[in-house]
Amino acid sequence: MNVKWIKQNLNVVLAVSAFVVLLIAAIWLQQRASGQRTQIEAALDEQAAQLRRLLSAKPFPSRENIEVLRQDYERLAQQYQALTQAVSRSSIQVPELRPVTFSQQLTKTLDRLARDAKNAHVATPPDFAFGFSRYVQALPARNLPEAEQKRVLGLLYKQLAVIEKLSELLFSNRVLGIAQIRRVEVEPGSASPEALDATITTDPNALYQTLPFEFEFTCNTGTLRAFLNSLSQSDWFFAVRTLKVESEKGAGGGGTTGDKPQPADGGKLLVTARISLVEFPAAAQPPAP
Image (cartoon, rainbow, N blue to C red):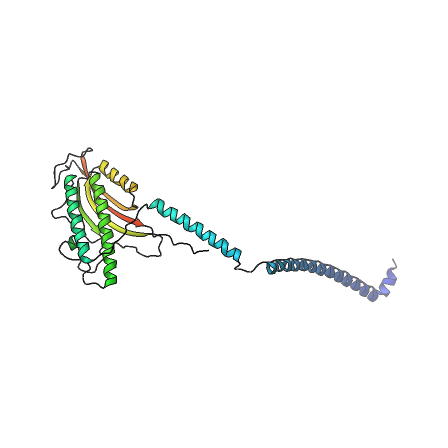
C-alpha cells in the first residue's frame, strides 16, 4: 500500500471510510426493521383471524346458549333439592293461627310434656312452662297488626314444636332433670328470665334458617352421649352450637317428680346446651323451557 498516496489523499480516504460505515449501518437497520415488520404482520394476521372467528360466531345469547343455561339451572336445582332432603327430611309446617288457638295448643302441649316428664322420672322445677311462662296466663300477639301477629304466632308455633321435640328426646334418653329452657323472644315486651340472647335468621333468600334454643339439664355421661346421638339421628336437622358441661362427683339423681337410680359413673353432669334447628327453604323451581 502506497503510504505516501494515502497521506496525500487522507480526506478522500476518511470520506470513503465514513460512507462505508454508514452504508453498513443502514443495511443493518433495514434488515432489523424488515424482521420487526415480519413479526408485526404475523401478529396482525393472527388477530385478524381471531376477529374473523368471532365475527363468524353466533352472537350471545343464542337459543343454544339459553338452552344450556336452562339445563344447568335445572341440574343445580335438583342437586340443591337432594341436598336439603338429605340434611333435613322434614320441616315444621305452620297452620293458620289465632292468639286463642295458639294458647289452647300451648296448654295441651305443656300438660303433655309435664305428664311425660313425670312418667320418665325427669325432674323439673315447680310449675315448669318449658320456656313459655310468659304465655301461661296471657294471649300472645293479641294487640299486634295482622301481618305481625301472623309472623309472631308462626315463630311461637315453631318454637313450641322444637321445644317439645327436644324435651321428648331428653325424656327418652333418661336425663336426670331439666332445669331451664330458654328461647328467643319473638314478641316485644318485658324481658323474661327465659329469654335467650340470640338471633333468629329468617331471611327467605338465605340458604338456611336457624332457630336457637338453650337447655339446662342434668344427666350422666351415658345419657348425654345418647341424647347427642339422638340429635344426629333426628328427622329434623339440629346443630349443637355450644356445649358446657360441669361435673358434680357423687351427686344423686332423684328429683321432684320421682326417684331415680344413681348415675352409673357415680357423678352428675350439669349441661348447658345451645341447640339450633336448621331449616332449608324449598328450592326455587326452574323456569319452564
